[in-house]
Length: 133
Image (cartoon, rainbow, N blue to C red; front, side, top):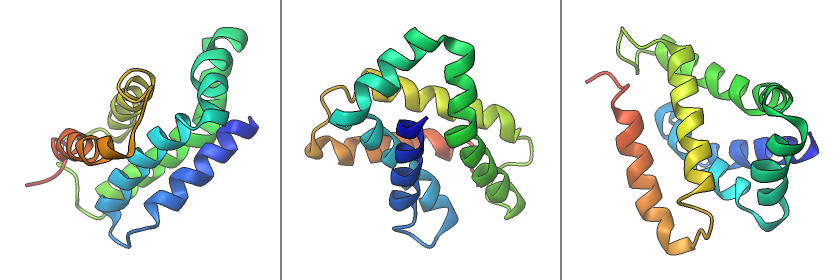
């Protein structure tokens, strides 16, 4: 739980580097991947917690600290007219959360600063599919 709280704080810190809501979404996503892969967090958050506590408990804690904030931001984006009309905010939250967890586990296991630009471009392209043209 304390690791989830720390990761959530890091996500918010990254996101608030911008005043623009859409950019905050992308920066927050990068913030999650960086925070999840911090030495003190990676093993606990991404490996041990799901294995030791089980999927349901891990998901409950994740929902409390990360997914609920992500969904609230996505709902705000929809209310502000950023998202396509047909986008379901809950499904977008699940899709984005799943993608972020997978990126954190696979692509970013050995995250290097030089990869941040590629990661930012990939996440920007991914979420742009939900954005109103």
